[in-house]
Image (cartoon, rainbow, N blue to C red):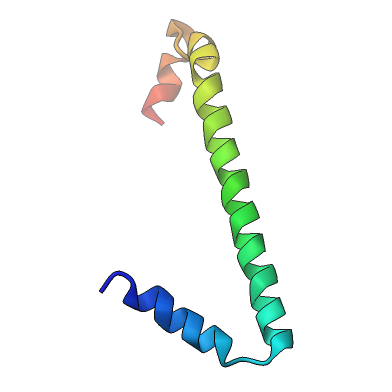
Amino acid sequence: MANARPKALIDKISALPMDRIAEIEDFVDFIGQREKARSLSRMAAAASAPAFAVVWSNPEDDAYDAL
C-alpha cells in the first residue's frame, strides 16, 4: 500500500501535457532545494548552540528565562 500513492501520483502526472510536467518538475526541484536549505539552517543552529549556551546561560539573564 505504501507504493500506491507514488504510483497514483506518477499516473496522474503522466496524463498531463508536457508543459505541465515541466512545471511540476520545477516545483519538485523547488521543494527539494527548500528542504535542503531548512536542513542546513537546522544543522547550523545545532552546531552553534554550544557556543551560544555560554552567552545565554548566565545569572544576569535568568529573568528572561521565564518569558
